[in-house]
Every structure is written in structure tokens, then in C-alpha cells.
Image 1 (tube, rainbow, N blue to C red):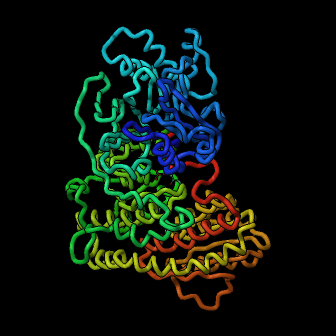
Image 2 (image 1 turned 90 degrees about the vertical axis):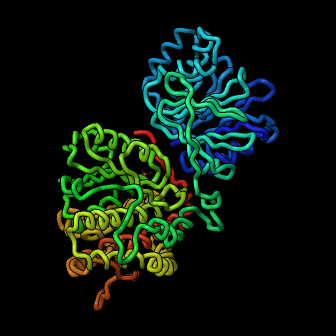
Image 3 (image 1 turned 30 degrees about the vertical axis):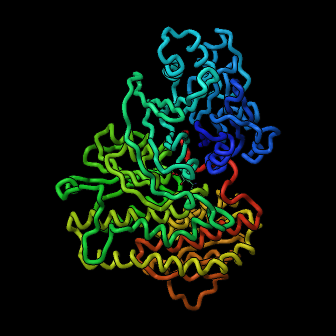
Length: 612
Ligand code: AGP
């Protein structure tokens, strides 16, 4: 939530900060601002709304400064407004700060500072930070590094989560940054350096990154970057080369990132499979060293995640249980962390997160570690917080996902967890080789089959045109089809603002069927041959009550009276969600387009949820 970017170098800072903000808007988009040091003074420009509003501010193009920080906000404390937009400055306009995260004790800090004579303009939690820095700067006792020491003293008082970028007109040659539970990366350039909350913001300028750790400080100058621990002891830090190329975070001719990412799925799945899975060879993961002795001790697996990643976990549960015969529980991270789950060293906890930064998932991971469980992260973002905290990490390698609505990350998560299940089954030697080999062959066929599903886009588009004005829709399925129904329903809600519910088809008669009335749209996923007849009966029940039906199926259906049918290729039930979800992704996309909505940046949402 919220995006921030900073620049110091030999070029004009504003255009670089603006580009960074534009590529970070998916993290928050209710207000934006920049602060630069211009003629020895801090100049702040900010406005409510999108980065476009900020860009339109008179005089912003004429700023010549070569150092600055910028922010695009997803409001937590204080409504979206110009006053509440970041950057925030202290009362004496000496320090400017951008902040991602939440300062939980800001009331206390405000009271303390008010007693010391400070006043506040915004309703944000952030405004206490530049004033605390100012306070400690004035009351500092050391001549050595007074700016860094003042930032550190201020930070020592903060409770909550933060990624901070600070500039000062007294020290125009540096940006000071620090983080706790909120991401921050530093990009190294030639005669210039960058900082950002997220890699895509600065990917156009560098591929060399330092990933800041919790409680770690960095002083970033044009030609040097210094790192300090929590006691301000300087240390060196390894640089990471990030393989993503800048164009992979651009639209490449597509109208929206979401559409681009839907169409990238044949390739993203290829990348996820990589060299890990080959016919006739054991499935291998370079970063895992699980042994039969260890896996034999595991008596349960937990999969913990949020939103779409949790839906991928539900599909993964079936694969792990069927192939490895280990009981699997799937939990929502925000529930798991507060319900004292029964876990111990015989539990393996798997955390799925595209961003690797979701606050609840990260907290749930730390909880499991503290109880002695082994933790495994599945993430798309190299070096993200969750991957650094987990005992093991496997990456989806789906490439940057920019649209708020997750699409290619989901399909990559599903295929990866299925491959993990094969890997465990091979180590445990608990499943017939032919079963695993057939599944491997089906996985390898996925990219071609996804292409065949994408060819159905026009059919989906036509259906979207017929239903986009509706207010309620229902999604049904059984088994993994039900889990896909949940994902389809979430996609529809988040980008088209149509109320929808997903139900296990067999549950319909236990209440929800009361909602079915003339003309209501019911979408059913039908891919499991063993359950087809049962689901067809459920569809008949809604047709009888006047529902309009769309069925996504890989079965050859005859004598059916459904209104619309989207046929998709057949595949193993464990991975059929990868194919059946695509018409649902396209449906929510086209409905949103028909309604004239902003597909990539739906209202009230942000891409990575780094606050509780
Ligand atoms: C998906 O379309 C959503 N935007 C959301 O549910 C998302 O999947 C969830 O917030 C988890 O994010 P993560 O994968 O980055 O942890």
C-alpha cells in the first residue's frame, strides 16, 4: 500500500520521480506528491487524486533539483486530500519524509511534540516523523552524523510499520532511508542512485538492487551508499541483480495491464515450470532440500495466504493431499495469525504471496516460525519480505504483475504448488510413477492449452456485453471447480463492482437458492468428470427458477439447455483451474471495460496490502 520513490544524482529529479510514481500507482492512487531541494530550500508539491493531477501542477516541470522523494498514497489515517498527501515536512521546513506503513503510536507522539511547541497540519500518522526528526536534530548531543542520528532517534520512538525516505535542506547531498515491515529497495546507478518501495518504479534505470532489511538504515548519496545496522554500525551489503527487464513492466500495446497479464499466461506458466519438471525425471527444485526422513515426520501442512493467493492454496490442498497423503489445511492469513493455530515442528507451513509483502501473510509466517514449524514461501518477487523470513522459498517467475487484480500470478501459484506436490510424492515414494508422469505431461501441455482458451476471448466478450449492467451474479462448482468459482467471483467483485457469491454447488439448496430469481446470471464451472452429473442437476435447479446460465466446461455435454457454454481443453483435474479460471478472468475484464471502469486500478484497492 502506497508507493514511494527517491532519486539523487546528476540528472533532474522530477521526471524520474514522476515516472517512478506512474509505475507505482497500483500501490495506491488517492493522492500524490514530491519534495525536492531547490535553491537550498525544500519544495513540496502535492495534490489529491492520481499522479496525473500532480503532473499538472503549475511549475512542477521547472524544478531543476537533482535530489527528491515522491509518494503515491493509499489512505489509512486521514482522508485523501492535499494536506494528507505525502511528502510531509516538519514545522521548520528542514526535513521532508515519505512513509509507507502505519505509525500505531502517533497519538502519543503528537501529544509529546505538541507539548514541545510543534503543530500539525494533516490528520496523518506520518506528520509526526519529520517533526520528531527536527526535534532530535535540535536536541542531539552528537556532532557526528547528526542527520542520521536524528532519524535514528525518531525511528526508535515509532511503533508500527514503516519504510521511510527522508531528505533535508541541511544535507542536500543525501537521502536517508530505513524500513520495518514495509518494503524498500535501493537501486544503484552510475553517478546516481535510487530508492523505491517496489522494483518496477526504478527498473527502467537499473537492474542492481540492494534489498533493505528490517531496522537497517542506508545513507544514499550520488556516488555512494552506506548501510548501518540498528546501532548505526556501518556494514557492507550484497547487491542483487534483478532479471526482470523494464519492458516486462510496461503495457506493450495492450489497453490494460490486466489484459496483458491474462495473455502472458502461456509464457508465465512456461517460466514457472522452467527446468524443474521434465518427463521421466524427478521433479526438482534447486532451493529445496527436503528429505524423506523429514517429510515422513510431517503430520500436517498449512497453506496460509490472502485473497487470490489463498484461492491458489485451496487448489494446492487437493494436489498435496491426493499425491502425498498428508492432511492440508488452508487458512486466511488474517485469521490464522490471531487464532492460536495448533502447529509444531511436525507442521510444514506454506505461505503464498505474489508480492511477498502482504502484512498478514508475513505475520502469519513469523508466528509459525516462533512455534517451531518449517516455513516455505511461494512468491513472485525476489527478495521480498516473506521470502527473506521463510526457511525455504520457491519463486513463481511469472514476471512483474502490475494490475491490482491478480491473474498470471494465480495460475503460476497453482502450477507451482502442484509441482511441489509431485516433488514431495516422489521423495515420499507414495504414488504410482505413471500417475505422476501423466500429470507431468499434462502440466507441460498447459501453455498450448492456455492459448486455446485465450482463443475463446471473443465468446466471453459477447457474454460480458449481455450481462455487464447486472447487479448480482453467482458462481457454482464442486471440488476444485468450486475453488475456481471463488476466484472468478473475487475477480468480478474487485474490478467490475458487481456483487457476486461463489457456492459449492451442493450447498445451493441449503439457503442460497432463495436468491435465484428470473434473469439472474449463474456461472458454473464443470470440469470434474466424476461430479458433472451432480453439478448439472444443480444447474437445472437454477434454470427452473429462471436463471440465465453460463457454463465453463471441458466435458462433452449433450442434451443440455444452458444459455452459454465456453468449451475449454481437457486436462488433469488437479490443474484444470489453470484453464477454467481464464474465461472468468476475461469475463470480469470485459465487464469492467463495458462499464468504463479503471480495470488496473479498481476503487479502494491497492496491489500489495502492507498494512493489516
Ligand atoms: C487479487 O486479485 C487481489 N488483488 C488480492 O486478493 C491479492 O491476491 C491478495 O491481496 C494477496 O496478495 P499477495 O499475493 O501479494 O500476498
